[in-house]
Length: 600
Image (cartoon, rainbow, N blue to C red; front, side, top):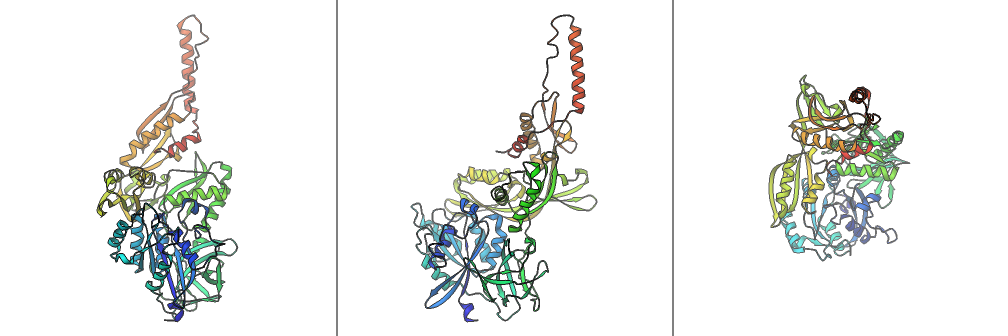
């Protein structure tokens, strides 16, 4: 092993949202003098305004620190990871680029769901775990209880847990020493064929896509011809280097190094997270294991509020996609909302962030339709159809079976809330698979449940019933057969495509009734009766009627024979009948928005 490789330490930080990960990273950068006090700011590695405001990491980051320890100079590569469940694939690739991890647990909140799932990812990759108890300066810190939780989880000694405070900087020197002493240097063959793992990419408007890589074997020189395994495309490495606060160009990056490569790629979909880069002249035989295509899990329509902004919305989404390859979109149109896009997201938080970034960065106010997941249907003719949109759903007589995506959900909550949490999950068609008491008053519940049930309002309800004490995490668990139906909403017998939705048969009647009642209160009265119907196929399951406005045509008859009044009423009746045949009903925009917020 070369002397330089012995001095490299690659590590990541894993923690639940809001356990002080970004703040502790700031203290590490300050302690190693990677940043000066002039450059210092809170959440330094979170460079989006949105990340700072919400206190979450959306995009993973990497930065190199240098530190002298026992008269030797060490290179410490910190690969920061997003904490939210939507970005778990990015987390898994960042973890694969490391040899060790700091497991940060908040001394006031204890172990939560994502702490455990990200820890399992780290253990699967054989990372050395350094337990860190953060926020020990808080008055509400429950140090002894949380320490015993960490000991139970990791099976480590209590003396191995390092107490720190990201706010005051207490314990940071001990963390740096533990990283150097306990995390092993990277393995790998310096003279072998080039194998580099892509763990992230960012878009530079002047230079194209910058891919962040960890060199697993061999070395990468500036000017080399390289090949990406997943796409099979070849490029020239225009510039390579390491990731300080600013990028630092180098002639060569070697085995164990974490750095970047710029090769003039303009299309984000050509650089896939988890892909392997190798040399064209001396390629490696196999890619690094673990690569997956990132698949969107939640789909929703995004439409401009003003239809004239359609082209501007397309440009905005294309620019966003350059920074976020996991966002997919295709054009679609709706009779009610005009032209828009069907977008695929990794999860609900991802969808919320894209919506907010469209508003902030591109000044686009958009309408988002009800989110849904993708289903697979086997037809009686032997075909298999992917359904991302209610309009793709074939008629029930053509379908043999439908499958929907399931998830394994872990919920950690206080034991007082077990009953309400179980009720909520069972109501959402979940099955309890496991129940483990982590301490006397904290329990981990595992459920198998359909993804479609959690995309709408599950997380909000969970937080409400547990008074904010439940933490939630999930992993995909394949597809299972389901009883899916398409609920159509009709006005005077005409289908309104934007209000169609795919539902489990169990919920169809209840939701159909709710939508009809809601529309009745929002559709303005016409000169004729308007029938609002909820239908599954040709079967009507709910109906409401908006009564007609009636003009008093007999007002001018102030006496005389009753037949005069009858004649006028008959004439009005004929007019109403004709109007009903040719009249059309416009649905106000507020009605669409109200139906989308049906469960609020």
